[in-house]
Image (cartoon, rainbow, N blue to C red; front, side):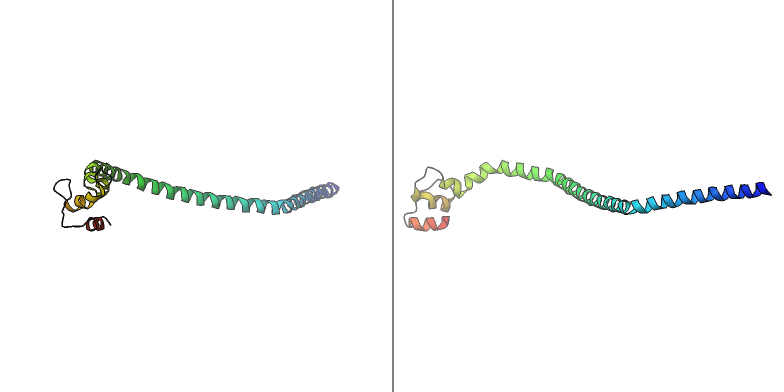
Length: 133
């Protein structure tokens, strides 16, 4: 019976020691809990910002792909426009106004659309200039 009490006391002593260590661990856990919560909060905030950045990146990628898909059409239209530029300039009043022609003939060019033909003597220069405006 004495050994039974000694074993019981030893078991009780070990249990109390384990309880003491558990309480110490709980105390440390509670001590670090605020820091852990701040770290968790910052981690969640960082995750949120990262997801937002990813969303914006995907949106930018989508817009870039859309732009690239439109580029061949835009390039084709640009090349077509450039190929038409000499013809457009030859028909343009701005091109004619920049030519070496005297001011009195500007309206004639606009009126007739080319460099041929005599100046219409029945019309005043101001009539031709009004066409320019």
